[in-house]
Structures are given as structure tokens and as C-alpha cells.
Length: 106
Image (cartoon, rainbow, N blue to C red):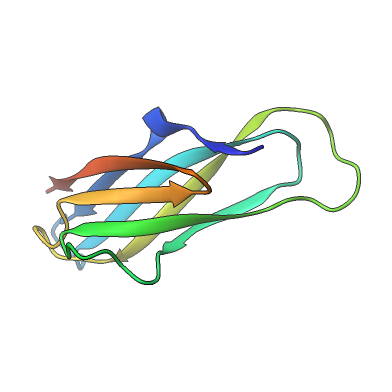
């Protein structure tokens, strides 16, 4: 069964000059075979605290036989956001979650 690689998750606001600020969240999902696909989407509905962004990993199992290789799928989420808009991001998958602090990069 896939699971979050909790120590791999990071979140930051990219506030570099010359571009509009955006939130970037990265991490990995460990899967038991080849052929899995996964992406991060906004959780609907969001939680009650607007400073904590809730995201959900959507994973699709492969169809047909696959190589029995445990591997980590990279995950990435981006959306426009201003510094201070979010203080934390919580990523949910099945019955597990990971919460990370949002840093600002100038």
C-alpha cells in the first residue's frame, strides 16, 4: 500500500523578485510497484483555520502486471500565494497525514 514519505515534505513561498509569489509544496509517496501515478490537490472542503492549507494526495494504481519495485514518486503542488497567507500545510493520504511549516524564500 502506498504511504507518505513524511520527512520528504517541504513547503515554501517563493517570493523572489521578478515573479509573482507562489506557494510550492514538495514531497514523495512510496509505492509498492511501478506504474503508479499520483498528484497533490487542494482538499475540499478546506479546514476551519485559513492559515493551514489542506492538500490531498490522489494516487491511481496501475492496471495490469507491474514490476515489484518499491519506489518513491515525487509530488509537487503550486499555487499563487502571498507571504504570510499560510503558516502550515497539511498533506493527507488515506489514513495518514504530515504537517510542515511554510517558509518564505526571498
